[in-house]
Amino acid sequence: MARLFGFSIEDKEKKSASIVSPVPQNNEDGVDNYISSGFYGQYVDIEGVYRTESDLIKRYREMALHPECDGAIEDVVNEAIVSDLYDSPIEIELSNLNASDKLKSAIRSEFKYIKEILDFDKKSHEIFRNWYVDGKLFYLKVIDAKKPQEGIKELRYIDPMKIKYIRQEKKKDKTNPLLPSNGENFRSISPELDEYFLYNPSPNYPANTYSGGGNQKSSVKIAKDSITYCSSGLVDRNKGTVLSYLHKAIKALNQLRMIEDSLVIYRLSRAPERRIFYIDVGNLPKVKAEQYLREVMSRYRNKLSYNANTGEVRDDRKFMSMMEDFWLPRREGGRGTEITTLPGGQNLGELSDIEYFQKKLYRSLGVPESRIAVEGGFNLGRSSEILRDELKFAKFVGRLRKRFANMFTDMLKTQLLLKNIVSVEDWNSISDHIQYDFLYDNQFAELKESELMNERLGILATIEPYIGKYYSNEYVRRKVLRQTDAEMIEIDEQIEDEIQKGIIPDPNSMDPITGEPLPQDGGQNALGDVPMEPEIDGSSTEVGEI
Image 1 (cartoon, rainbow, N blue to C red):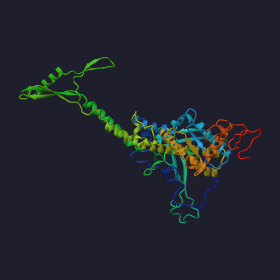
Image 2 (tube, rainbow, N blue to C red):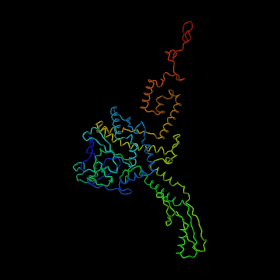
Image 3 (spheres, helix red, strand yellow):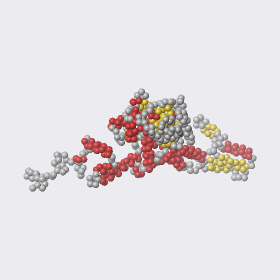
Image 4 (cartoon, rainbow, N blue to C red):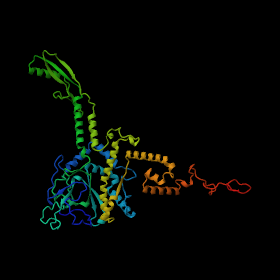
């Protein structure tokens, strides 16, 4: 346990010793898991609604099995990860990266390799769903210890219940001249942290109930650079716990379950009509009256039950349930023997409360309420007719994609550094310009894009007569068609290439008025030539010539 398993990538440019701060380095997930008592210091359990993070992850996974919750999760995952026969769900985008073509080609090649060892094209839906439900995703980056320059050999998934991200405070160097000479308040001057992962393969291993050093027999301390860790970005800052996107739906799902169960019980108990038998017992004593009532009940009561498994018919007259008839004695002087009927429950078809909690569940998960109904969905007309919830949902999915892409960024960083394609300093400068393009099939986005294109083409048709008089061609392309510099260069190259291949005609060879091709007769009657008068006496005379 004294040494780390895995590898670490060292930064050659260490921070100056003169840089001190009472605040430690910012962490990516916002969680502060300090072990301040040294290597064997105790990590305190999380108390409250959930005892451990393992219990919380188990609850998330149980929630994902509920039909309504599963439907909402599938809506999110299907929008975020689009499967296609020909295109990959995600591609790397380097148009904003100011680097050589050789470097871009190397980055694209390594990104493709990472997708291959992840088998992402086939397992993308499963990987994204696990991350969305658990709120965390861990992968062990396996390399050849003898040949680390060959990069990542394998990526192995780790159950979040078996691994924990640890930040442990380093021991202070009391010889540092910048620190107080009396040795007091070292913690507030410059807290430095060791970051690593603690892995325990035990299936029932509580992920946050261990000592700082862990169980020496079963726990493995893994270096930070050997693990790809991608969190949801949602943090309970009161308890220092990474939450899943399902956390907000815990209460709504429990309420829906209770309402559904109570509705079933109510309908089973109130649905049947029951009768009340008032039996006249006259002046009989109490004991004889009860005996007489039981005799009458057994005489007229029919309680035969059929066992479908054995084919037997048995008499269950001695058992009485709440859904059976009532038998009540009546003294002499009353109205005698009487039979009345209790009506069944009223308004048993009311489902407004169920629908309310279903909508509440979908709202808590960020899914539009219109997707609950099978026949629902948004209008496939103009985008202005689309519900605002669909727009919010599209933005929500976009945020999920951006957060999930951090997994590829970390894997790509390790791969490029191990293969010496880039240095640590170079990566820090280029990482912000590496983007990812997810395959998109959101119907709202398609409708919105098509409507915008129609509007732009309509404006273009209106403004076209004024091009060259009040507007330049470049101005129209920038302001009306909203084409960028890169798009204009690409489009011009494509047009020129298609003209040379004969796919489209050359606009210079077309009559601007009729749109017909100009005659190709050597230019005698071409546009702009001086017209000639008919021949007179064997000679030609230009117009105006005497």
